[in-house]
Image (cartoon, rainbow, N blue to C red; front, side):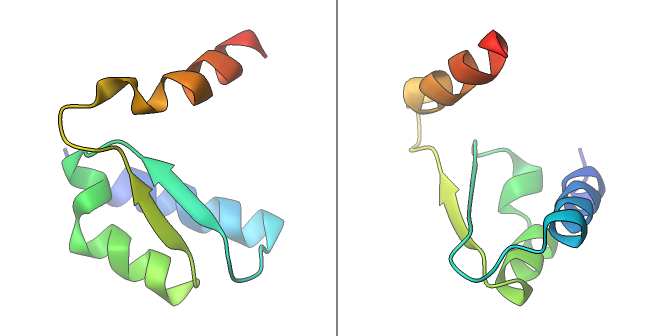
Length: 70
């Protein structure tokens, strides 16, 4: 899996929403989110990276549950 999809998605979101510094992007530990390509883009936009802990798959469950209910 490549980082291109998540980089394109983040660029699109930032371009549409124009968030200020202090944005936090939370993700799992997938290789596309840990890639240098993605991390450099986060840095360029002043966005902090938040990742699930290793072997803690339930870290994302509250957010996934919320979006599933929309």
